[in-house]
Image 1: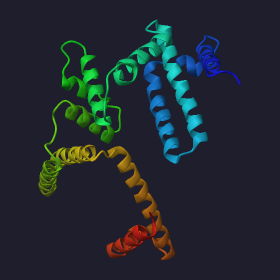
Image 2: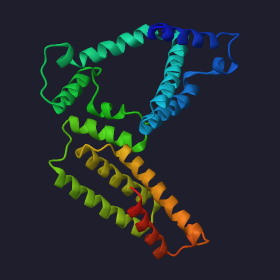
Image 3: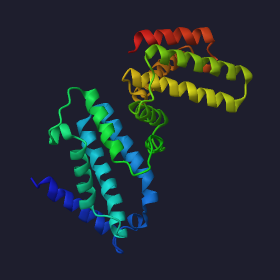
Length: 263
């Protein structure tokens, strides 16, 4: 069987051929800007495959993502910006530098200590004049909202901006929910959005403190909601009506039934 390196070069040659003047019109038209949405889509399809625990699907989606990554590299190589060798050398050096307990003589005794050292090393890599706020700004805006919020919260906490304990954090959450209730009572959309955002960000902090991935938690709950709604909808059809035609009492009864019957 051909080595991974040989197949890797074969894929690179295919991408280069697609970009030639006599290659594929669609591929020739692409730019770093136009390819962004495809990168995001392929990354999410890979995440979906991992969620399904489907190795064949993971293998296929990894291939699709590899193609997109190498395609982006090809675009920048054509501009003379950098080469694939420079990309690989850069990440190799970075990983060695950020793991002195593996590739050097440092000793770490816990995952928490290792994460602290990781962030210390990252801070030293910052450009002169950069600040912790720059680290927060550098969390990509293209991330899903909950994931971006959690990463910002994590970076702030690693740099000393942290709650004293869980009780203090929960008290702040209670305060934010109170302010949200006031905003809803006033009925001003902009104020509601602001207070809802504050409450959501505080919930993200609770997730971080409990070592819960908020994005994954919400995805699981959304999936659970869909399954339960499907149960309610099927029961409503048996009664000859739609969900919206059921009384609130009937909807809540079917919801309770779905909670009991579905995990």
